[in-house]
Image 1 (cartoon, rainbow, N blue to C red):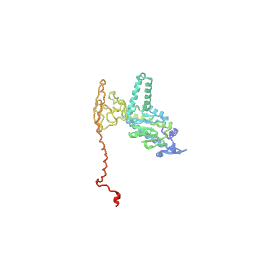
Image 2 (cartoon, rainbow, N blue to C red):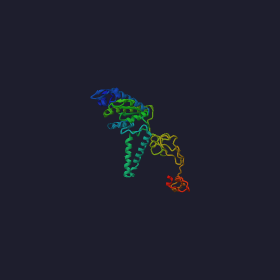
Image 3 (cartoon, rainbow, N blue to C red):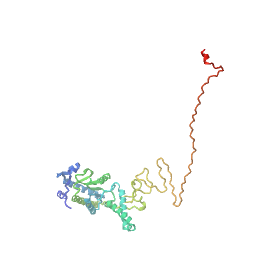
Image 4 (cartoon, helix red, strand yellow):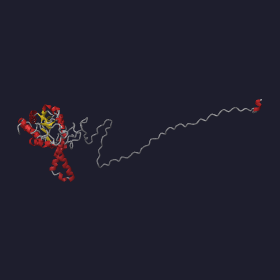
Length: 363
């Protein structure tokens, strides 16, 4: 490893930042100037950040914890993998899986599932499958391996996380902050330095620049292991496997977990809980009740017990009961309107006097 100096950083191009139009004003304390519309990083601040990061890494490793390296840019994946090969520290180089830190129990169950698939492959299980089933088996194993192979030996949450380009690894930084994990970031002039606890201002796109910084951080990991051995602190080890009978099921169900007997640990093969009844008040996911247990009473409903019968018993055929017609109530008839006969006009009383002639009247 070369000495940590400004000259060495200039040779690897660590001083070259981003274009002025893309800069983050919060990076102003780490910028030396600009040239050809490109910011120049202050390499004194870079050296200061590397030294601080090395001190933090030593203390974290000496305390018995791991350091997680995160760098998913295509050109940097090989450099991140080299750190794992040299130190054995967990890393993420393909893509960040949501919940890697905040939902580690489920991630651990998927790693246990990957190990189970690899065991079946070694035992010749794939040879007994059809060509279609074997292709599906291999496709699923490759997918899980690609996403989780770097953290399969991370048996608990890390003590610190080293992120290359926090802007590109935003989800990883947010999860680390939520879980209280210290973040050490290699940041360029377009990043927000406030999301990192320790800032290493440098070119986070150039392979030589990142490789030079990782080389120094790798030496800090080795020094931390020596300190851990001197202090007599035990290294993280694989937890005891949980028997199949004690597991809560095949993997953790979606939305499951909660208090109520998680399957023993992140590698316990399922966090959906034990066989006991779920605690009152929910807890995070619906659990299947034990056989014969009464159903919970729902608001406004009736608690009816469930009856179980053997398969050989004929289920009673439901017959429809004849519908009983209710007696029809006759509708009240409308009153018939009868016409009242008109009263006859009063007739004049008949007189027996003879009719007089009009001529006589004129006399």
